[in-house]
Image (cartoon, rainbow, N blue to C red; front, top):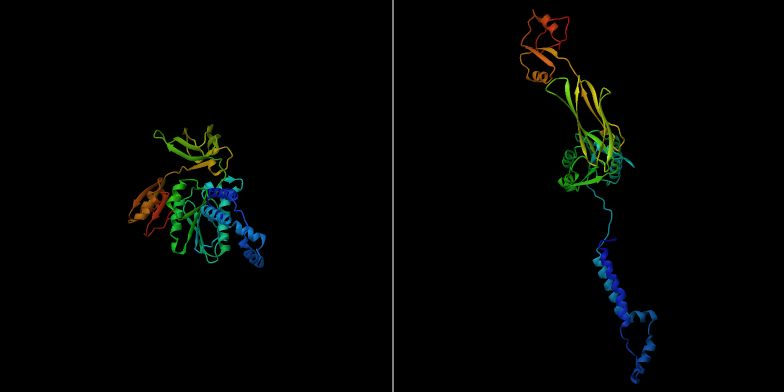
Length: 379
């Protein structure tokens, strides 16, 4: 039992006051008169009781007053009793596997703490209750359908790994609601670190959801944007933009560089205050091919956002001969590739067939007979 209003205990201070008033009350004097000798003989024959009984009867009013003060104090203190109840409804578990769950803490990764909480929920299920597990990744994934098999649940939790992508908690919770049955007293649990969005608004949006937060690891500086833009002047001139943000509660010195195929393009060291962003712009001229890397050369609690990548591949134009009487979907597919140059024909001319095959990188024939040929790429 626990008292929820401890201030009511001050009323117990009335007990000493009652005792003092009781002791200050004038006592009656006993005087013997002649006509009492008959009653004295009767009392001696019946016995006067023990000393404790005499004290009790003499102070009965005081004891009743003390009892009333105690009862009033107990009532005003609002006692409550906690006990563990077994919920027989099903459990829908949404587990955050976003990149922020890889943050290091003194007790391991945040994701390790989340899995431990999930395992406790699975172990504490009622005998007839089932559990369903949803993985809140970039796209929500139903990792484990409803089951009462505790071993299957533990196995599914061990197989889940954190990703390098932001999590879609809202979409995952909508998916969880599609399995929710209020008639069975079902419960929805979300295990997350609350990062990457307005978590308070999410809690208000889903009142049936019970969040279980994992915390720890507050030092983090991350690259939030990495973009290349080709200028209008030349196909070999680019503008590079990088955004870096300090998520830490203290200022951090950030050694930063951008490399293309491990060749440095830009290098700078700067300081960021708590929650400060910095935009970095610089030009580049040359053939953009290979892998570009923006890198923060520091150690913090979340290493996954210390690097950002961009992959460039320069392809030559391909000439394609498409022979078809009309295929909307095939034509749209080929038009979606910018480096494909299409020549279209509705039939094959046998006299020009060998020449056409030799002049094109690829020939696509759609549902027509094909003359024999000894060279070229034919589909």
